[in-house]
Image 1 (cartoon, each protein chain N blue to C red):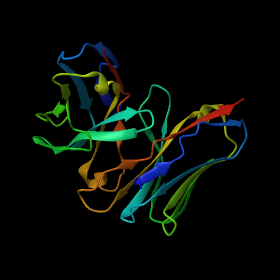
Image 2: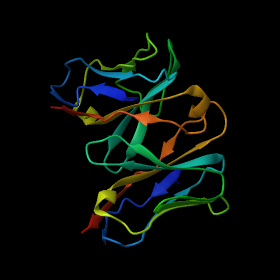
Image 3: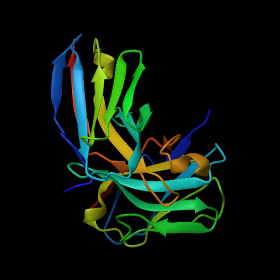
Length: 112
Length: 116
């Protein structure tokens, strides 16, 4: 079983739709969870950051972490064409030797 | 502007011809890392450095070398490139105090390498 599983899509939605992106993971040591957004021909940029279980909201974006199910989600409300990008989940455990583990990314297209 | 700068952005080379991809950051970050990104495989770590003169292997180090002589620079060296090293490469940096929490990573814009 891979450490982090993410459906690569692609996902195509109309403008204004609610988008749900998900990752599952197997390593219970992961404590910090991130969503990165990567535009074409650009590097990943941190979008949402969450510690342990719970929800975090930032504008149209909501990140959810359910550690009991080893499942994280990113919701995008009122999606816009500018949200078209690849979204990567990432996570890391505690301790100085840990490293970021990334999902493979989901390519999202929001159609006007 | 705080940033990680990679050069070149695009490179086509031939098998066996040594090349260096440069990475420089202006944020005084101790931690720097190289990743490659391939379709269906995602981002995989090649090498990382916790500070000057301290480097270690990531998940896919074969065929690559790195050095960290200065805090701001972390070049990736391919001494004898092969076609299976055709990929999109990213350099990233962060403060060591944030690294273990996955916070504050800044990525460069990427280097698309093609080895023919």
